[in-house]
Image 1: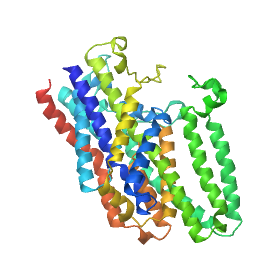
Image 2: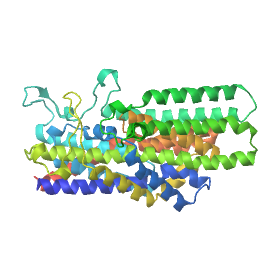
Image 3: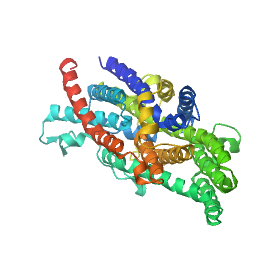
Image 4: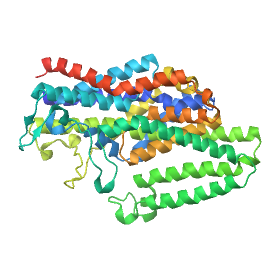
Length: 448
């Protein structure tokens, strides 16, 4: 029975990943479609390719954060099943209504809501004594907040909730600043060029400092030291950050010498780069959520069936990392491969209702604004992935589009549409949690 539940959860998690792909396809392709840089079909193929390419770029930090949304020692597989079902239902509903809600938050909300319902069902609203003698309450089953190690960023559901606000704000601020930078670079003034050169030097120095040297690479991919460093996944991400910033900087240095027609032609080509960069971030952030759910399901299966890690079949031998105990995470290769393939296939299916909202209803988007929005969104996703925070790609790109709209004038942003989106963002976690709790109680009647 437990093994059957585990397989059902894995299948449904991959279905959710597929739905996530077509639900969030608009995030990466809306601006390139709106500006007619690519046809809709070309755009989804382009985005899907880079969704899948993220498999070789990003690690499993976000997956680990999602897996630890609830304490896996205190839940059962019905909890995870209920969370995934609720997340699928909410994603399909918002897709049907054309609302670009967060797949990240609906999955975490569903997982947390089902876990809370399980704790209440098992222990009620009062305190209870655990095996180690400590007293806990129903709300302790969710990992709300955990201080960062060695002064690092804290984790937990509260941090994820905080980034409902912070991710779009960072995206909006980034796209606004990029737009102002490029607008000034289009003039003949010297100061913007000095700033651009300083930014290029600063970027090269920063990325160099982030590089993992050959001596610290656990499993070098090549005999050559150079190629092992270049193709280390952590390093690839920072090379991409440098490439994006240096490409835009190069354009900024020549912007003032280009005619309007030539500048627009170059910007349209740069949109391919910014769209690809955002699709990479989308794949890296969103596919990891499903990896986290699968990892949590395996951990719960091991706990509820009293199996040992060593007795598990190799294809299910998932180990959740534990920094406190010095345990490193491990995941069979088929899990990330399946997750990245599912989200890429979903992106290929498109999400045309949401494309319309993202590409034209928030603000009218030109190639210039598309580059600024997607670049800011991509950089935001790269840095939050580095910090192991599962943010919403939808919120990030929406904030970025609002940011470029603000450079024209405040009224250029259709605030009526934006306020509707904000309500969807605020409601996603509580509604998903409530829905998951209901699903959990229904499933508990039949799955004991």
